[in-house]
Image (cartoon, rainbow over all chains, first blue to last red; front, top):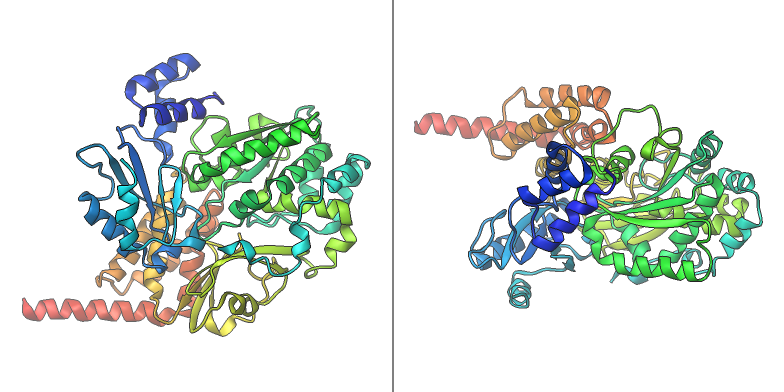
Length: 134
Length: 398
């Protein structure tokens, strides 16, 4: 069973989400109930049972980022992407999520695009950062 | 960048060529544990359990197989000191881990690294590889287990469940990890910062280390200063340093309150900034969030409880439902819809959660609520009278 989390994670990394098929395969491989695999998959915020965009933006909404105008930056992100938090752009390029503290508070407000941290964000910088991801 | 902000006792963080480890290996495991006990080192993750005592419990456990876990699931709001240590000097941590494993008799060690820090993995793996090449890992295997996004996995029993391939839910205690931990075997879980203190304690001796700090809090502590300050970043201070001293270093002005220790940490109002930072008073994870006079207390508490509610693992009712109802009440106040009973209800709920929640998250979640009710009660009362006023306007305008 201790292989489970890594198997789900590698599915997430390879396919961008963990499908019902994938969960079934993992459950059979490890001889675990499907419910257990589903339970673990849905417990963690970095695992998704729905397809995500090519790039996943997680902007921090915790207190230290909020104190540095995190909300303004999140609003500008929303405006630039044209989608609400939790949604994926129609072209499948970005998924936009609000997240809890990512431990980059010394560079607040901050966000993760995939696994890269962008700190000291301003509405102006958002555009450039988005443009650098296709 | 914060890299230059280690302000005092900088020599502590320099790479020392594994002198601590070499010395530890010339001592018996019992002597290593005695030295750590004598140093007074306590857990730096927030709980502050005496480190040597923990090691001794695991070492004396009869089972042959034992585990060591380094908790690098630094999810506490406003905390990034472990990231800083991992980035700046992973060897210090690895040296500390090898010493700890030798002392307790573990041959497998895990580093549980939060997924938000995935960008640190490659360098950490390289550092482990270098230790292997240099022959420091003959008797120890160090594996990195990455998390998948869950604050609660920083709680030790939830962390172990996560490594075991389960949902990261807290376990009932006892048994405690040194008796029955990972895979039901004796396990030691130490924070990155705790383990990074070990090599120098062994190299320079418990006496050298315990000369710093207060009677119950020895050595130095890393603080992460954020919020309304000119220079946010990591600061190392001797235990027992005054909060005001740290705020001055970071350039804080017009302070209304400070939250020390992260989302469940104590709230210190502006009149009490002379408080020393140590286990006897306030410490927690070392997060120091500064709020100036333009900030709103109820808004802050609402955001904090929203965080805790989202991150509650949901296993026990007092935490799952308690944080939910607190968010509902505080949300009402923030939106100008508060009612008279709200303050009493917050207090009642807090009382239940402190007594009945399963783990530290639920037990400590009421701290910011109760502290702000004690020091800033008027802010809550104002919110309610504003709500009453807004309702009366609606009635008049019909």
